[in-house]
Length: 133
Image (cartoon, rainbow, N blue to C red; front, side):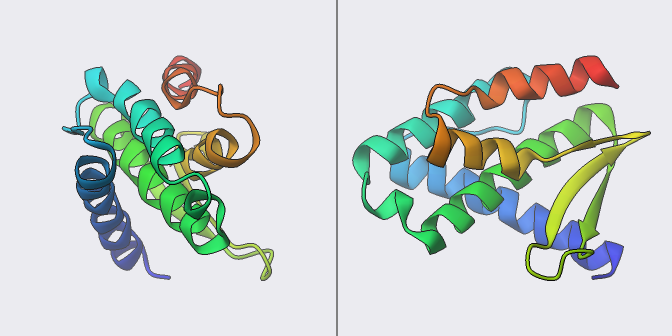
């Protein structure tokens, strides 16, 4: 995937997160760092409102990727970085944000919260990422 295509995909996915948060969780996302904790609220609300549906493979993939894209776009806006597509494992390609020598898997932390440990905080991960650059 070419960088311009990847950037466009991530911007569109982040916009999808804004719409989904508003429509499905009654949460406003505004692309500010002060608002990052609202992603935690949106995921928690989706889990509460759609407990079965939110655990289906397609929904997990979509939720994690759109909210991961949103977090990455906010991070990129305030801290820089470039989206990278890693297809070294053909069975599990991934997208991450690279800032200097560091990479951040924002979709991965959303997956952790959605599927494995609902108490995980994506906003704490975001803050840790900021402290590591």
